[in-house]
Length: 132
Image (cartoon, rainbow, N blue to C red; front, side, top):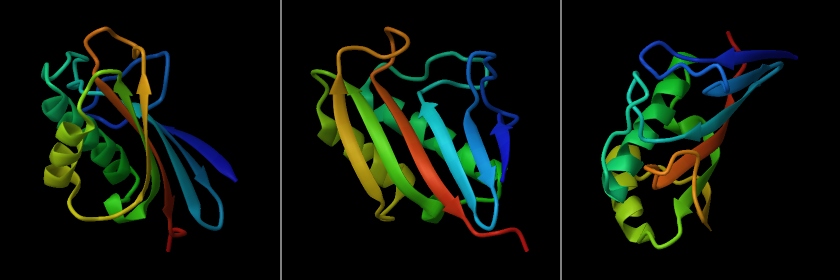
């Protein structure tokens, strides 16, 4: 099995973490690190939960696309919300960006995230078929 650190073009590059780690073997397991509402320069996008959720999911889709994956390959997502946020706003935004594709999901409320501006962070695990 080979581990490949994924940092797609068009996303914020940070030396402290990878956007995802792909485990390549008979199938490919993709572990996507926590995605926040940041643009390629690292600037926070939005000040409300709906906008930030949409951008975090768009970043997650960008990571998936970088290795030939789609939302249908995602087996599990974990959503971390700063305490006091209305999860319904995030779910409404996720329906617009993610669509009706069901996946296993956990939603946790936390005291804070990596930057004080962040309201949401989403990580995921995806299984991609073996390369042809």
